Image (cartoon, rainbow, N blue to C red; front, side):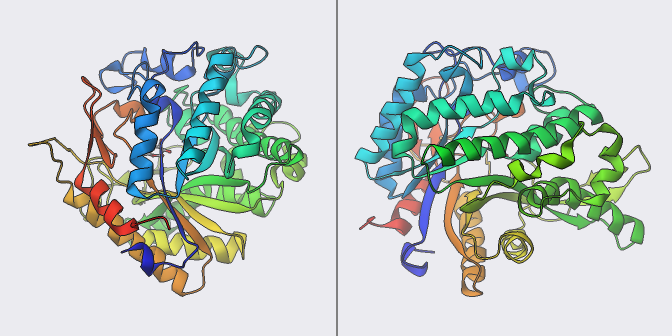
Length: 440
Ligand code: FCB
């Protein structure tokens, strides 16, 4: 679909994150838990890390040109805590803060709205040593980091969200162990999932007090589908939905956690958690949904949550994720109905990985074009039904460091050759450019 087929004030953007693109080894950044996680055998494909990544730290101007030339309105980027505060607390690395200052100015010069994420997963190692997200003090540490960013960038930021995808910070990293710090521990998970919301609320209050506006939260939701028709499978699917999707939305908007999750978490929650909702529920101006896929859930008789994922029949991306666009419209409708009402909604990530190669200077990623148009059509559908979706941000501008999957999974609109660092716009980039036209 073209820009003209959306409401006039609807905004389009692309996203990246600091550790995935910048090249963390440059510019005096401190070590992060992703560096040590990646250096531990078995965690990351080929033990790859973000030391060089796309070298955006040096090539940022070229990358901003790519965003502007395609006609995107918004650039959703993140600030690396350890680049700004190498020890996570205390001393500020002036070079790191200067980098983000230039980057934000570079966006404004090109007419791009800076959409800031304060934390997209690379926790300073010094804070991981203190227990990281398991330690309640992280809310204060994160608040202090937020203050540094607010003081320096706050006057030029268009929108801000404290934390990318609380579910990944909590469950994926502390229960499944797939991301740093790679724990598989229910107590660590219960603590992390609560503290991540406490840190979100604390940072929101800091930004609000600093005069920043347009503050939101960004959650990833996965559409749960029962693997069969049995009542046991239905219950397993409800539980998956509760700890994946509802936990954070209910914490943020209803001031409680789902009973189903508490059945597993109750003995493991940090002391006094019930008293934190006044902070967690700091008022927001928008909610962002990151959406990629559905999951088929079946009970498996193991320890709580006693279920597993089974493969589904739909076409899959390189991640092995089924392509299920109707999940996006369904979630947007449900979020507005159950949690956010008239609050503006944004799709803050959506996109797919494919095995793209450059042939004769071109990358023909037709599947990605189809993926984007199918999901945009779902957005149009719910807008027509009155759901207040105000923007759509694709993941990602560039092929980048896809966490535990290293550089193998390519999500970019722009191909990156990780040997030469050359950028090659893919067919999907050109399609976006055509669809967006002039930004007026
Ligand atoms: C999201 C992350 C992003 C990227 C995409 C594919 O969960 O926010 O960094 O890894 O998935």
